[in-house]
Image 1: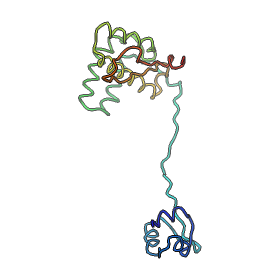
Image 2: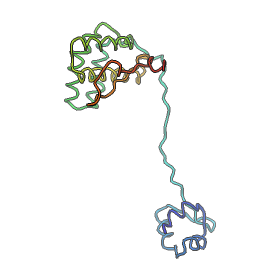
Image 3: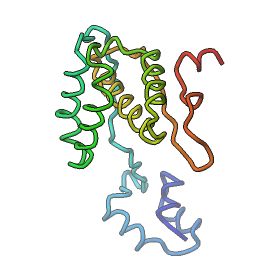
Image 4: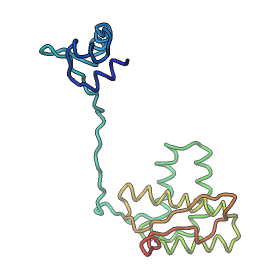
Length: 189
């Protein structure tokens, strides 16, 4: 019988009680548990020490006071330098740089990041379709844009009005506009 599990279940016990329940001599096992600080002896009773996780959690709420009017060009550049350079591989940095330079920046160069909304995402999606970009490229470009927007939303620099989701491609389904989910579509359902 596992004496540690029994001690954990009983919480407090005497040597006679645990010997009777376990139907064996538990003195050696109790000494091991005492030495490993899993139980302690106090006022004639063995007591099991509860191991409480000491992880602390905090809730951080971003306020709208930090909302800034940052240009898309600066936002993309800062995202590459502050986030991608520090958290991604060099190849990812190069790929993100080219996607931003050739696909996102031409469309958003005259907009501030705060001004980007779901209609802009739908327009850029339609523009990509007119250019006959492959579905995987469209998905990757929009996923990167979504990642950039979420990054600045989490920093509290922009508000959370632009919310969209790009679903993954599979062999069974093709990437179509109706597979993109916008927050306003979710609210209507």
